[in-house]
Image (cartoon, rainbow, N blue to C red):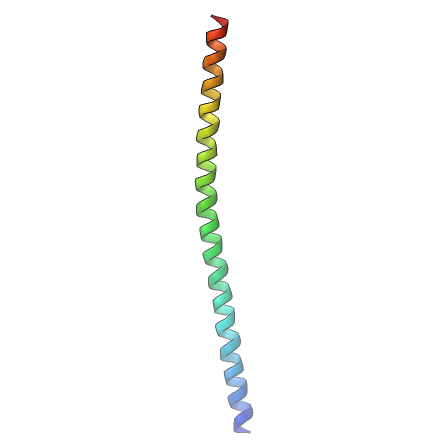
Length: 64
């Protein structure tokens, strides 16, 4: 009877630690992905602004 109770206890501890590990990994992956995605979005916005300014400056120079 005691080995059965110990086995259930150890199994519960292992499953719980695995769930905590997976949850922590998922949360950390989400945070890192959000941070990198935000930086990529800001970089692409800057690229878009520079391209728009370059095109507009060329159009103004051509029409003058």
